[in-house]
Length: 119
Length: 110
Image 1 (cartoon, each protein chain N blue to C red):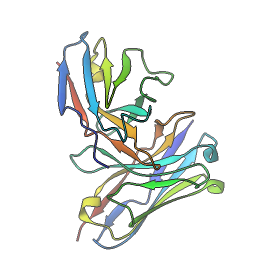
Image 2 (cartoon, one colour):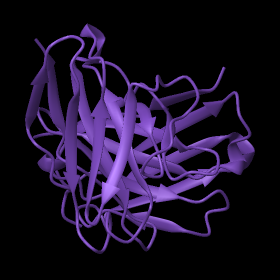
Image 3 (cartoon, rainbow over the protein chains, first blue to last red):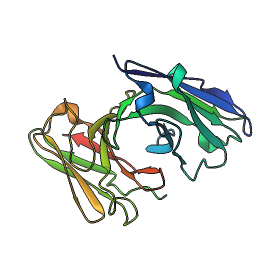
Image 4 (spheres, rainbow over the protein chains, first blue to last red):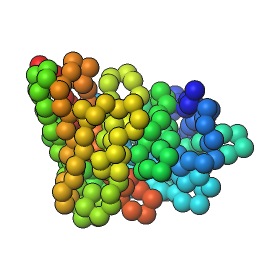
């Protein structure tokens, strides 16, 4: 079964850091680009960051550029999001998602992890 | 990176059809054939309905269809069913390895 499982969320003070992880199983992880997408309370989905299969291409939303770093470890079938200088507006449910075969769609999503930035 | 524009809400009765629009710009929707659509029920993971403007992943009913004209993409749901009651989001590739979502549309099945 294709599965993505996020972890690492929690309550953190403004200005601090947090690292999210996404463990992949059931597919050849290093064949696919991966993404982070978030949903703030009461808001819509927001694309946060993406990384190609070999980490050769990486992109960030303007709202997180310079503060968040996406990375992957293909040997460990894992995706990461290092979040620094966190702000209250980063409070959200964070999903990792897999790119579909031969498409730009996100065909598999994890169940998400909650990040709350508050003092 | 401005969010794509979707109507806040649409509604329809079972059996009817509804169309949700998604308006971007010549830098995203209008230039790339990479609009995707997602269905999102509360407390569940989003589900891919369409990708690359009009293509359906296996397992998605053909009641869901996509189209695009200029900077506006559309999702049409035919033969509405109760389980279609959900939030719907469009998403477009925006170049330079970035993507942008729409603000989301709440579909109410009356």
